[in-house]
Amino acid sequence: MQVTCPTCRRPVDWANAPDRPFCSERCRLIDLGAWLTERNAIAGEPASDAAGQPHEAESDR
Ligand SMILES: [Zn+2]
Image (cartoon, rainbow, N blue to C red; front, top):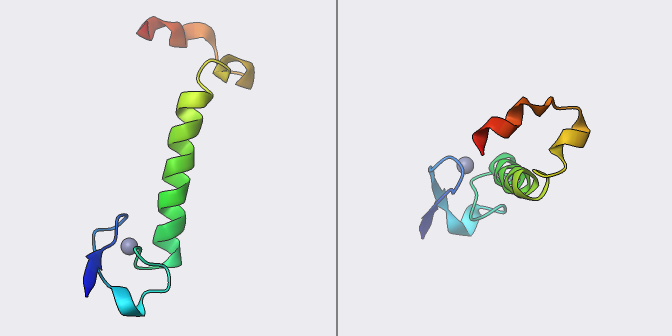
C-alpha cells in the first residue's frame, strides 16, 4: 500500500515507513513546524508588536 507524503508529495510505502504518513522524519518535522508556525501566526498576531515590530503593520486593516 502506498500513501502520499503530505509534505513533499512523494509516494510512501506504508508498510516500510516508520514516519508515516510522511516519507521521512525530516518531512514529519517540516509538517509539524509548518503547523506550529501557522498557529503562532494566528495566536501571536496581537502580541507581535511586543516582539519589536514597527507599527507600520497596521495598514492591512
Ligand atoms: Zn516527504
